[in-house]
Image (cartoon, rainbow, N blue to C red; front, side):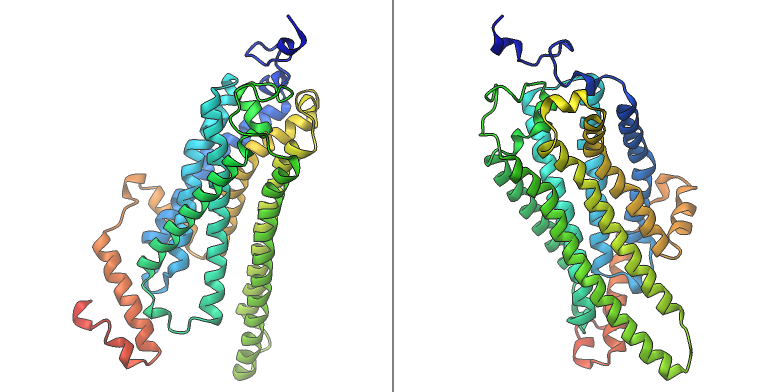
Length: 367
């Protein structure tokens, strides 16, 4: 057997430089624990929010942001039930086929971009609701939500295709999944291996840009609400108000959420750019980064972020728990009642703003 053949990775643990990653160890136990928590507690929290934003919240206060939040949680639930389960299957059974591994890398890029697009869309809409759109009742939330969802999916899919063509599917995760040796010149690869710097940019620069957008808008909204609360305090002649404390709490929890997302993306960048392939199996820290990269971001977005969302929305946890205690079969709602609630909400907003010309768009006899 020559040197080239001796470097080839097979399912034989004696030749696989990633064999320690597939063997049971403390990092693998941690990774599987994160996986199980995500698939049980995380998915339950996501289902509760999806139902609440669609059927459980007050129709008079349900906006486009609520619909997109439900769509974002649906995306996370889909990722957990498909991609995360496949990654866990590979870690439990060993290397998989090259085509499935290449597809999983593509799906990983797709879900990453789609999640960031949803988060950016939601925060930008919050900004526009507060500072730009004054007549929000004239907006067809259902149509705008569908447009935003389709637009985000198309953009994320195109980005995934571009990354695939550029060779981003040939990062270290592909070789761990397929059981091939990255030291060999593309054993079954179709595209050229991407540069480590480009890989680092994808997994750190994109979340960093998203965090910067959120940070700017969070701070701007915070100071706007602070100024409005100050005016209200002067008008009502009060020293303190619950709105001021809630404003600070919203800023803190929002910044914490984005920090968690950014931190959870760091292990993926580290295993691609910092660790050598042989170090991932031999180093405990390398193995830990592998499992945090493969299961950490799903855990963070499904549990800590969702718990923060539950804490920020009064009545959400009690409403969801009451429904869940009666069984998942009761988590449904009548589409006709949703349409009626949507029309009523828009009519109430337009009427409260005193715009008779807009009120004619939604006659009372149609409600």
